[in-house]
Each structure stands twice: as structure tokens, then as C-alpha cells.
Image (cartoon, rainbow, N blue to C red; front, side):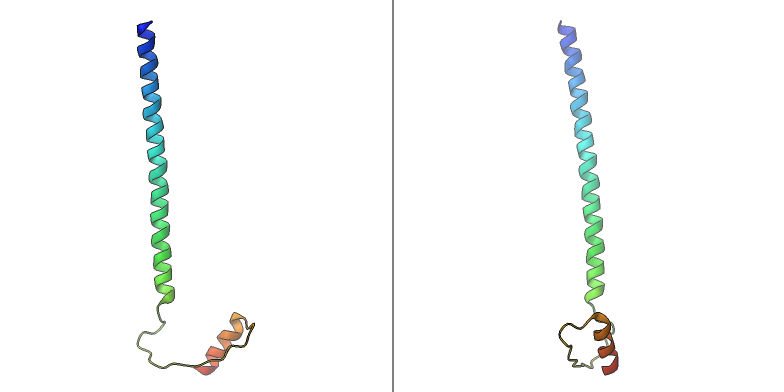
Length: 81
């Protein structure tokens, strides 16, 4: 009886250890995905918000009509430059 109890206790220890390892692996993978995604988003936003030409000092005023699409806005900007 005592031997059976020890075997069951050992089996339960192994299950808990395996469960902890699986949980640790899943959390590590999720943390890695989060960090990589955060880094990619940071680099993208940093590059997207920088001026195209940092040496340019010329400012241009453009009146954008209400409801104008991106191609219309791009055309207006191209005309003004």
C-alpha cells in the first residue's frame, strides 16, 4: 500500500513538472512573439514618422478638399512641390 502511494506521488510529481515545463515554454514563446512584434512596430512607426528629407526646410501649404482620397492628396502635393 505504501509502495503504491509512493509510486502515485512520483507520477504526480512528474505530471506537475511536465505541466510547469509546458507552461514555461508557452509563456516564453508568447513573450518572444510579443517582443519581436513590439520591435517591428517600433521600427516601422519610427521610420514612418520621420521626414523623407531631413535637410529640407521648405514648407508647403496645401488645401485638401473634404472627402479627398489619397491619390488626390498625392496629386495636390506633387503639384505644389
